[in-house]
Image (tube, rainbow, N blue to C red):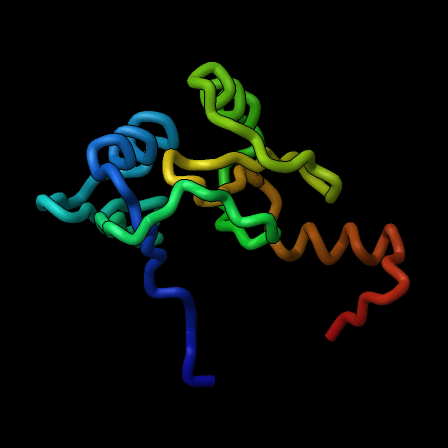
Length: 136
């Protein structure tokens, strides 16, 4: 297989300082570099880029597309409470296995906190019998 992973995730942002504050202070990503039009962060070993883009609109799309950040189960409640205390807006209630918190960043990008992995999800699917789900 030629593709062996996700290299990085880029968020187009309208206000770099506000976005850096959100991702570093609230989500606790590590800031590794910054310039006038962008910043590089790390979420664990995953590279996250923020780039100022004049085309950013603050309208939140109505579809389910989102990026999910992994947290330890022991940190989930603390992180969720921290985000809610900061006034971060939620966009969806969790209806799947494991704890999830769906929320928006300052530019309306859809994000999620989740602590299970694909293995746990597939185990849950097997145990709960999704009728249309095929396992490969």
